[in-house]
Image (cartoon, rainbow, N blue to C red; front, side, top):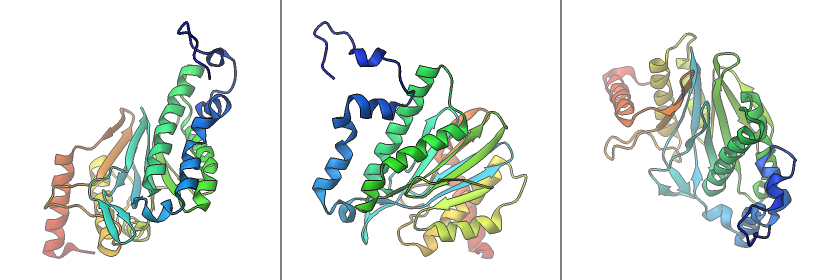
Length: 275
């Protein structure tokens, strides 16, 4: 788009069209939309050297849903970061947890946040939760060529559905397939172990505090068996990122509260409660 010397926005901003920001970007600034793909193609071995995020878990409870992620990022057999944030609030009632190539995933989440804001600005209302999940699926599908180069992004989407008054969880595959999960789910390299813990610990009618305990225990178990998953780190005071979404909106659980839960889990296992 060419800048107007008078300082006015280009005509493209006032033309009727789709409420999708991604489609707007592809139509009027394709060079910007292609930037990630071009960078990946040029880098060649980017897949091997790019930091990867790992385990994300989600649990629904009576009145909402929780999403949590460990804080470790890896590059091959090296730990790239101990403090990476992998869970992002995307609007008032939804969030995304990312596993896979960190840089690409974070850019996708930022674009998704703009996508939701753009839709609300154009349409004057928020997308339904299912609509948001489908929008994220289409963005993953657009990333397919990068996935073939090894730059895979596998997010998990969750939110509070204002229409049903319940938390809902959606998972994806690399081709953009979108699947609604029931009660709990996990993605990433430690997901197999986390899901085993969730299967044993989940129970109907849990409140938010009980769900936080379950989700911390699941990440603890994943870190026990998967070297790419970082567990709670009392020595460095690094705790999992936990987002809660309910009728009051989306927010993060404070580190001090997570620390107390972690201390309780460790004490329980020290007394023989380890699973």
